[in-house]
Amino acid sequence: MYEIGSEFNYIEKEEARDLTAMYEGSGDVRLLRCGRDAIGYVCEDIKNIALAKADAVNSHKEETSANCRGALRYVALLPALCCDSMYRPFEVHGAEVMFYGINEDLSVDTDSLKKIIDDICSQGEDKPVIMVLTAVYYGITDISSLNSFIKSIDDGIYVIEDVTQGVLAPSTFDTDNADYIIGSIRKWMGVPDGAVAIRNNKVINNHIKGQNLLDTDDDHISDGIATDRFSIEPLKGENSFAAERSKALRMKTQYLQNGDKELKTRFRELLGHAEDTLTDGEDMYEISDESRRYLESVPVEKIVSTRNNNYDTLYELLEKSVHNNVYFKLFPKKKSGMPAFMLPVMIDTDRLNKDIADNNKNDNKKDDHISGNTGQESFCDKDHVIDRDGFERLLAGKGIYAPVLWPVSDEAAKVCPVSKDIADHILCFWIDQRYDRFDMVQTKECFEETIDELLR
Image 1 (tube, rainbow, N blue to C red):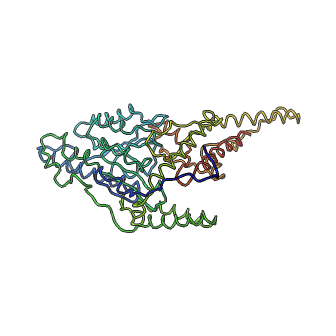
Image 2 (cartoon, rainbow, N blue to C red):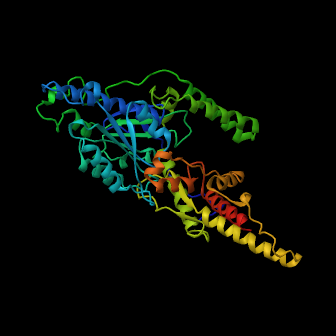
Image 3 (spheres, one colour):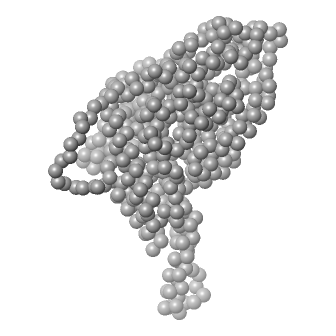
């Protein structure tokens, strides 16, 4: 039961943990500046392994195939529901990007994915090096089964698991099937920068040892490629991204304390400029010293517990809403054991606009009957049409921010119309450790109130 006031309850002492140490044990762990740097870092390691394998293969052949060192091709398969910061690092590092479909419940369309992989593999000796990025959407996706499915099609594929939406729960990472694990840490807490890249050696060494290569020996394949660490080192030293974000985050703290609108304008400009300095994973920097120190003492259990409680509270409130399955619908609840990232809903703007128009027509009929102006056009114009972005702005005006994380590219939309539909109608509510049950109640009431106001 939720209570305000009365006697304090007993609370166990909360202990901070070294988040950086929690990732150890899965392979070679590197802390980098951001998620796109982590993707670029992994791409370079894969290229170095693939080149070493190609050299080994071709050194035993009188005639080289198209897949010699100078002609290696790379194809990266990504879920259609993703943003440019996820696929551009692959392009920057020389890979052709293709998209595979997802379903309405955020599971992967495995038939679509298998067909794409089969088509690529049918190219025989000249098939490219294949990388597949998989992601856990809001804790819903059965990532282990997906990664295993991909490996069952062709175990020569490099599986890169994006754990951004579960980065505080290393125990949920699929270390049995994923070659690499990457995730953005800065999306979970107020640090200037931070991402993790893990080279899962027990899986990746299957590629290095060349289990699927003929007429070659393991020692030759792994020559020059270490079996226990990344083949490259990140750039070190200060960078403007971390420096500007550090300044902006401190400025935001001041704004929250005194409400100075000028500070808000300034920190938002700084954050925007910091993002503009990133090079889509081309220059891969190590995490800043400031962020590394911060991550060495993080109340992980408290963060995860608070997020999960807020998620469960808001999910239950929205389930009971009179507008649920009318003007919005919930996705399946996150899996047990996954930390809550955000809570997504699908806003049905088509139904909303239809009922707004119907209400306007009925109001006009009443007005016409009273005034005698029958035959006048009903009052329903473009100003009364609401889309997802417009609804989001209305919520923001009330202090509730529900961002869209992945604007889908035109190419991805052609491959998977479902992803386009989700991107056009999804709203993602914040449920993180800054908030409590009261804030979740406020979020639900504000959401319902916004719908009701549009329908009046």
